Length: 337
Ligand SMILES: NC(=O)c1ccc[n+]([C@@H]2O[C@H](COP(=O)([O-])OP(=O)(O)OC[C@H]3O[C@@H](n4cnc5c(N)ncnc54)[C@H](O)[C@@H]3O)[C@@H](O)[C@H]2O)c1
Image 1: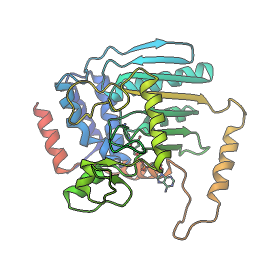
Image 2 (image 1 turned 90 degrees about the vertical axis):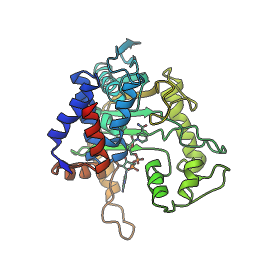
Image 3 (image 1 turned 180 degrees about the vertical axis):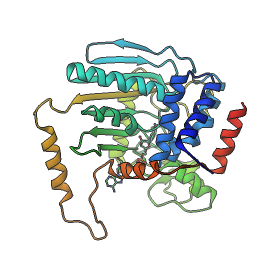
């Protein structure tokens, strides 16, 4: 089934309002979900709608949060999201970080008692549009084994850096630290397909290309101990620093209903002209120099991070959104809840 974005947004807002979110929060959440579909990040889009509603019904996401912002200095704030849906916590957080940076040059916002917020890049874009550089971190439920361990503990903990590029396409590096998306392993297991080498271990710590054994075992981080170190850094910045869950205690939103997730996020934003007053020309020169390099056979264009997603969004924006049968069933069920 295909649906116009505006119609889908109305339906999502209705579902979330039926689940007791206010109109504003429902709109913020619906727009984030639709954006994930438009950039092709389906694992963070409509496929999660039922899970969010489920967690609201089980009182693990608070539909009426009293979000408190504590001013630590003119630049620094701590937000207690009161177990709100993650989209709303991140929306409040990025707006505060932008406001602080506009005032003082740099804004730093820690967020605790939050939940899964989808794509870091979605929030980074908002800061970049205001001509700010931004770094955003969030932790996530266990999926990755720390280097040397056979037990999952780190989440896929994305690392996000955004900056103005001097063109209308922002530079947004937004990458998880796992070799492969867990969704892809699930699909391979369902279809009895192999997964690539070097992305997972079985439960005994032996490398495997068997998707089912990989699901029982652990996923591997990018670049071995280096990726493991980055995941650890994100856990410290998002979890330890902000007062949120960390060290493998973030709950899996799909199958752990023993309590709220208490995910943490850290957002840092700063003006691009802090040290020179010609960042725009310098970044243009930087990107131009790199794009002009000789290319590997088969590569027509060197892209900077964020370009591929921008083009995908632009292409999908003109079309109606495709809704798979299982999602259509979820939507129909949720409308009747
Ligand atoms: N909230 C969470 O718990 C959570 C956890 C993991 C991931 N995520 C989100 O999932 C999304 C997807 O993550 P991912 O790791 O699968 O992203 P990805 O592998 O698709 O892309 C990673 C980065 O590489 C860039 N890139 C891709 N192809 C490129 C090319 N040819 N040349 C130059 N740059 C290129 C992309 O623009 C992006 O910045 C991210 O938005 C992330 O924030 C969220």
